[in-house]
Image 1 (cartoon, rainbow, N blue to C red):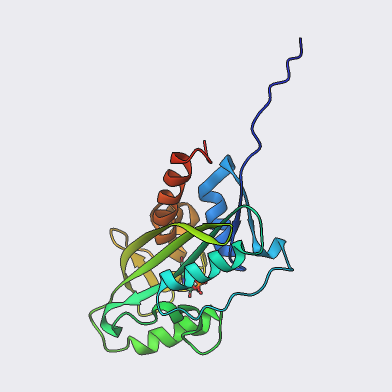
Image 2: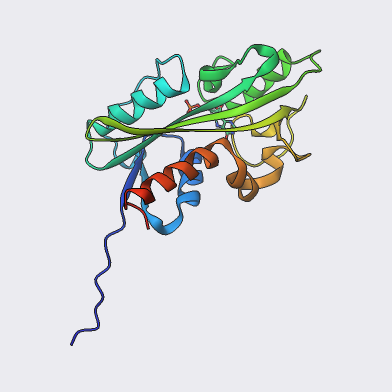
Amino acid sequence: MSDIVQTAPRPKIIIATRNFHKTAEIRAMIGAAADVFDVLAFPELPEIEETGRTFLENARLKAIGISREIDGWVLADDSGLEVDVLDGAPGVISSSYGGIEGDHARNCFYLIEKMQGHSQRSARFCCTMVLAKNGEEVAHFFGTVEGHLLDHMSGQGGFGYDPLFVPEGYSESFAELGDEVKNQLSHRARALAQVVIYLRSIGLLK
Ligand code: IMP
């Protein structure tokens, strides 16, 4: 008799992003339960323009757009920072707020400038995740983390506005707190926790 035990292949989830920080965070949170790739592994996939007015619209565009081109489960996240005193800005334009797409340091300096003279410094990171398959949305999920903004950048970890953002209940920025803490309480962690519950409920994840 053979001792070989057949194990089910691990599910494959494609993350509709070219931001390797996001992929690394999501991979760390999903752990060994699935094989997580991002679209950098599939150079033939189209670049999806984020023309939506909300995080949900943008996440839908990315998840549905990529899942039309590829077999399997696609997860897209759209996220950003909302600052109360700036009426929710930078919001969906978080990644290009300072004028150059993806220039995180410039975005932070621009936000520091915009916040000068404001004592009301509450803000939140928001994340919307959309799960799609065969070109159709299957489900969507939201996560937020409340906090406040520093008037200077502090810390080397993370990305984006992490050096400016102090989550509620802490006195250091996300960039100082490091990945382990951030991955437990971030907007992305909270949205992803719901994704994982959903994928377990349909039997895709153990
Ligand atoms: P997206 O790639 O269109 O979702 O844009 C996300 C942008 O929001 C990033 O480029 C950052 O500026 C900001 N952002 C989203 N999540 C985070 C985070 O966890 N830390 C810091 N900045 C973030």
